[in-house]
Structure formats: C-alpha cells, structure tokens
Length: 427
Image 1 (cartoon, one colour):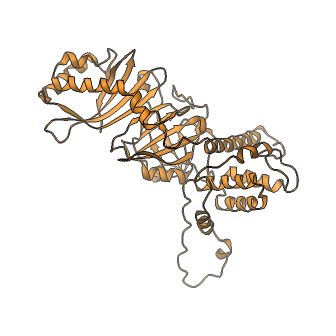
Image 2 (cartoon, helix red, strand yellow):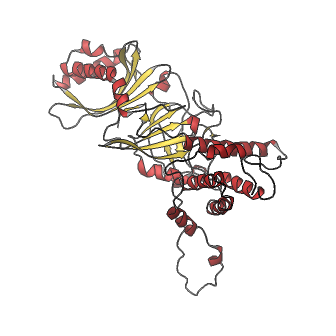
Image 3 (cartoon, one colour):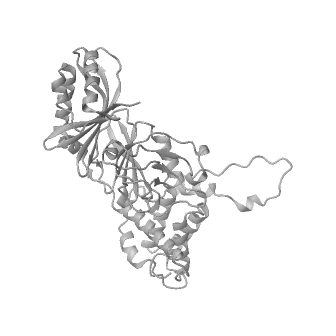
C-alpha cells in the first residue's frame, strides 16, 4: 500500500497517549456485540428464544479504535489498519469520519492518497463542505489526543470543590474537548474526556439566536429523560444555567443551552455544528449522565483551558479567601456597616438593589444573634475574562445549628478588593 496521509503520519508517529488505543479485550467485545447477519438468516425454530440485544457501545470506544487505525498507518501496518477500519465501520456504521478513513485506505490500494478525504471533487459545494467538516473533526480529535493535559493538573477555574461536588466538567472549545473529573477526599482527578461539537458561529454567546456556545462557569440544572425529547437529542440532555448571573449582568440573552447527544444515523457532528449547545456522541453522553449530579456539577466552558498544579490555584486565590473570611466575620459579628463594606454598589439579587437587600441582611444577622457562622461545603470557582469573578457556594450554618440555607455568591475583584455583586439562596 502506498503511503497514506503523508503530512498527517508525521504527527501520528508521535501519538503515544495512555488509553487512546482500544484494548484487545474491549475490541473483541465490541466485535462480538455487532449484529451477525449470518445468524439472522438461520432457519427459525418453532419457539425461538429471544435474541440477546447488542451490547451498548462503550464511551470513547469508537474514537479509541479510530486512533488505533491511525497508529497502525503511522507504523506502516496498512493491512492491519484496513482490517481494523473495516471492523470499526461495521460496528459504527453512522461514524462518518471512520467511513471516510476506511474509504481512503481502500483507495490507497489503487492510487496515491495525498490527504484525508482524497476523493474526486464533489459536484456541489455542500459535498465539499461535508468533507472539510470531517477533516476538521479528525484534526480536532488528533490535536486533543496528542496535546494531553499535564499529569495531575487541573483547569485554573477549579479553586476548591466541596465533597458535594462529586464530579466536575471542563470544556476546551478550541480543542473540541470535554474533560470529566471525579472529586474525592484524595482530590480531583481526570477520569475521561470526549470529543464535542459547539456552535456553528463559534463561542462567546451574547444574544439569542447567534448560534454561539457561551463561555463561563455554569451548573447542570436538570437531566431530561430522552423519552420526553425528540430523537434529535439522542441519548438525553443536560441543561445548564445559561445565562448565569454574570451573563445577565452583561446583558446577554438566550436560553436552552444543553449538553445533549446526536440523532439516529449521525454518530458525531462536526466541531462547529450546533445552535449553541454542546453535543457529544451518544455513548459518551450516557456515561456523563451516569456520573454527574443535577444542581451540584459545575460546567466550565472555556475557549482554551489553562492547566495548573492544584496547589497553585489555592495560592493564587489566597487574597480572595481573606476577603471571604472577613465577610464571614462581619456576618457573625452583627455589624451591618462592616457587612455592607463587602457588597458592591452595583449589587443586584433577582431585581433587588443593595438598598433593597440591606433589610434582608439585617434580618439574617438578627436571626444569627451574634453566633459565628460556618461556611459548610464551600465551593470556589473562578472565571477570568474582562473581569475577575469568583463563584462561591456554601451552606451558611450558625453555630449550634445542624443545617442552614445553601447560598451562592458572585464576587468581582475591583482593584485590590473583592466585592459581592450577587447573593441568593439556591436549592
């Protein structure tokens, strides 16, 4: 077989990603689970036993096997690559990128293939656009798998997650990648990552209908049963709280931003193909749905994630922690003047100005009766763009009480000071 993808193979020769290559065991299971046409044609018995249903595809399996095809090509094992791609398209017939790669491998047996999707020029612009979208998808998958996050590093937005935040999601839109983290007493760790599609017009959503995906810190608000949705959304949907408090303060509009799956006949979508939602392959979405929690799982959507050592986030947030501790002390002490010092003049809470909110604070301090308050299950998430914002969630529990209201605050850094511009009870 003549050389396939000359420029791409240089990159693929460097591909050495732990877990990127599908294991023989999982591959064998997937092949065994594929429909067997020969058995379907076997003579029927008077009382046939129900046929076992094919095993649900595993999250990440299709991509892992596609990368293995690339790796085989990079090593010059063209026959093995052909066999693997044949099995891949049989198991995932709606994986259009895999179909394209398989077609290129077949074509290379008769003529040189100069690049991915090296087929005669389509007769219409739409066909050429579809080829370009598949090439972009391939590049996005490869880039994300060759440029892995540093071992043990976390997105800079994750300052501190409480034990209630069992999982967290971070999206790097420049790499078309969603990263899923598990959180435990031992700390946060990356457990999986998936290819995703974003808005047709890119990111940084501002107004309704702009076909862009929002950037910011969000939370999953519900888990929609796929039975309640059209099949366009595939395996289900996880809405997020766009527009969030910061978005609303900036006048951003729109709604209905979801993490959802793909419709029948389309395993994945191009990198920029949605009306603003984040779209995953159905097997990947099913795994995400099983692991996240409504109301507590944060979803950070960034144009480009900044990966840092876990202890660095805590160090950089020390000034904010001091401001939060001062607010906690003022709330406990019962001095309304000291407490109001920590609130921005532009404060707003569901339509209430700072003047409207002051009686609420007075009433809360009266109920506390000078007792110290504990910030239970404290979670800190940071978002830096034109401003430096901290999203804080905690249970406000007065000394002697077992529980208290769960609150969320938005703080903004104004020069060297941090001020609260939103505060409200959630849950």
